[in-house]
Image (cartoon, rainbow, N blue to C red; front, top):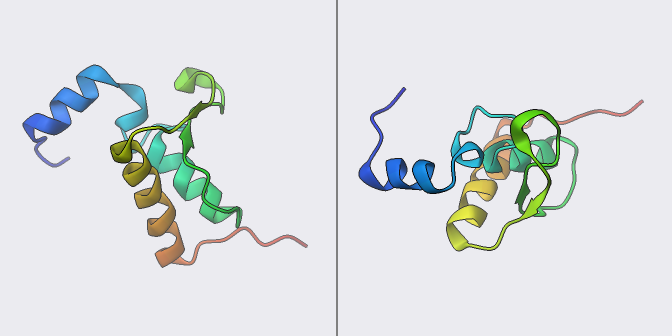
Length: 84
């Protein structure tokens, strides 16, 4: 794991769960999932059970950037759900 910047540490302290990319339901995870299922970008986090809590629509520009990072990461990988 990379060293966290002061900004990263503050963000995690203030926001928590949704900023850890490995967490199911995080901003990055939801962006990647929307891309995987060929959905249009709809920035949000949570709403998938477990510790993710209820769904939250993303309001801040930093949250949108984190969601879009996940979406764009999956788009670049080409990993898509194929329906029969």
